[in-house]
Length: 196
Image 1 (cartoon, one colour):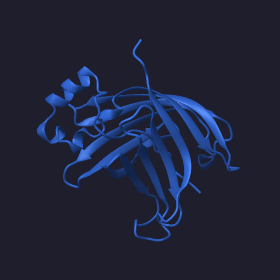
Image 2 (tube, helix red, strand yellow):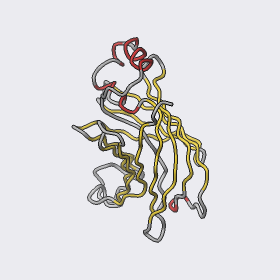
Image 3 (cartoon, rainbow, N blue to C red):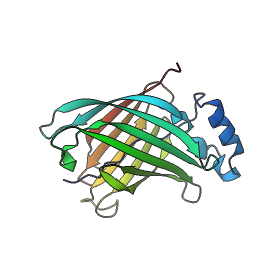
Image 4 (spheres, helix red, strand yellow):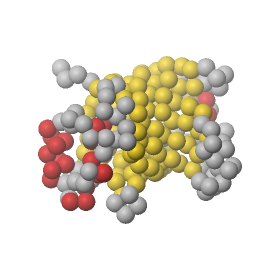
């Protein structure tokens, strides 16, 4: 089973954005100032992360990480810098390793979907998740074999919960049956850093 590791960041408007982020959003082109295009603003800022990563024996290991999220391109892109320690059995990691990652989130008004581009130091090329916000959740998918309608499709799901809270929850899960059932692989609890 091969899963391409995709990570974090997405979702909902809160009052947590910094003054600088609010200014960038106000100066953004019109297409980047819509309510949908600002859904990820809740993630702006710095985060301490506790990761729980499933191991080959079915157990879980816990690791630390941190993330910093900011607006770019006059508010049209949400960029995250992520760093931490991880051990992904599905990527062949026998021991914990240091991992660096960057993700770029862009709202596509044509498709009414978010595109989340993710690249890490283990696999230094962008891979994409596509999805949207729904009420208090944000869910994004990457189909790894065939069309989403195929019962045998291998699908990776990235989901966010507790978007208007601190901490927020992020989960990466895999389906081998076209989305009928899901196996969580990587869970992150993200707590906003307190300004010193």
